[in-house]
Image (cartoon, rainbow, N blue to C red; front, side, top):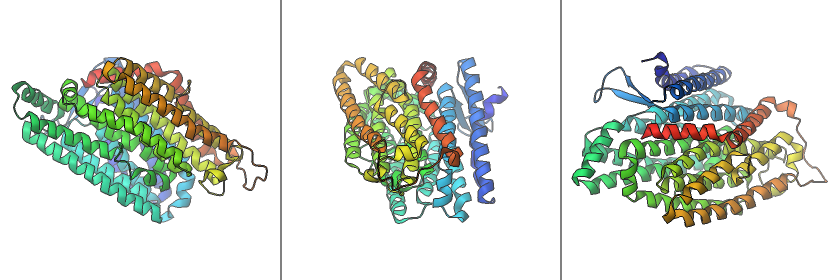
Length: 497
């Protein structure tokens, strides 16, 4: 085995142990360790992606070189490496964009704790991406939950503490259902490695024995992950969690954490259950219906909001609905659209949160729309960033969101039974997206003659400006050069199967 095949294991281990290192460092040193770790893991992920594209095959890495059932396995393919690389990019830019606000909103004595939580979150996301063991996935789901909850409440104002409690309650409900489903699956199959479970599941279906308990186990795992990823109607915790945490936390939670759970769900569909068997259980139809509802009701909730950050948060409910609709279509094209939207939404939503804080800072720190009038002139880079993120979410050509919606439309056309509701919901949701995003863009570019707030020069916030510019470039790259990304996703899904 080539040395580069160790990179997935190294990535998880480095990010995990960097949290321990940060615990004994002052905040400034922990910041540099965190930045170095994200860049290092991103570079290893890029090298691994290049290697896998060259070989055209996935590989299995046995930790400790012990085979099952004694050992644990990591499995890496094109989709895993591409997702790890993308997550590192979004996390790094989110940390850069929110660094100034982090210094203001979090007590200096807790800065190193913040970076500990970010490192733990990164390690758990990487583990969810790479692990080939169902129970190991559950362990890192819990690590992810604890780290995310800490990132919400570290600001320690009343609303963040309340949001953290609500997030923890809903997350534990989801985790509990996931664990019960895993226990039932282990009882039915006697395995925890995903590939071994799939062999046993296939045998159960062929023999026709224990089919009902098997479907129950699958349903519990799916519902658990749906709750944790804030699929409608399990999204009540989301607006406050995203709306009142530090801006870096909001960007990371909205763009990465929920996507990590969805990525694990896709692995379960392909590697644990099998795509065809999962389709035949009809659980996929339930996901489809809830996804359609999320697309509409998430957008309606966003329209009613008068708080820019809560509006962006409710938009995430709608965008997560898109992903579940793609999964619910039950086709390879639909799954490809969902995975692409994971990338597009992560790039666009993190940009919106980072840009929004620049707009509120020059509006008397108010998040009300009336106070944001003319904010695009007072903070030009934030105004441009918010406009680009909005255009992407609406689905305007050139930007990432357009490609996502085009892929969803193509997937719907290929599924005759679900084509009409998908296209109708897609059209309605796009109109609603345009209403709440474009009214905000118009608001921030409406001149305010009295100019009661000070403007900010781009040069004063260089790192913030760099993060906005790079996020814009990422959204345009996904929109203008989508074919290589689509090809990589297609190759990765083939390796999944």
